[in-house]
Length: 115
Length: 112
Image: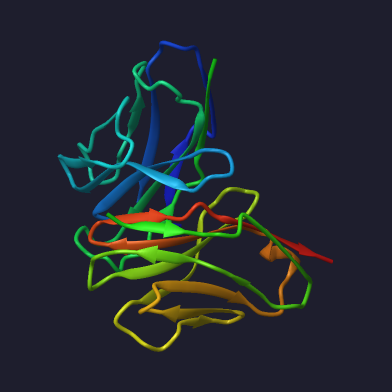
């Protein structure tokens, strides 16, 4: 079955350490996205990529970095510069890179806890 | 910039009854889509329904329908014959260009 796989489901890190969240899709989608969700709140866009080797900052990119070396993969690194990294992170993809009508397909998310 | 506002943080409804979730948005784009997503306790985001802004006819998907008022920039979701499995967070979202902007969500509890 096609879909988006995020791993791991739960991740624990010490403050000051960088951590990378994995996101893989086998839907052959062009665009991929990373969202952050805090308790009781909506989703906020961190980064998105419309095509391989290209990505753009979203609303809350500070303290995060991404890469898009392959169409299927869009890993997110939470750096030590991110002041409040504990959150639920959702990866998503969409079929078209320049279409506003392509719905997002989401992964199951990664819960990151930094202590 | 787009903004999406959901003014009802929490709602409840009795099983089999109808409930309406509110959403307003603001965009300067002419072409855009509006979406409702559901996030059950599993936290998987699921697309419920979508509306094309240039279509006047309200979208429907089985028990789910929308009331799209373009001039008022309002996009409410009506759930008919509510079921226990409808218990979830519901997010309204607007997509203009390449970015999807979400509202803060409404937590819906369906009571038996």
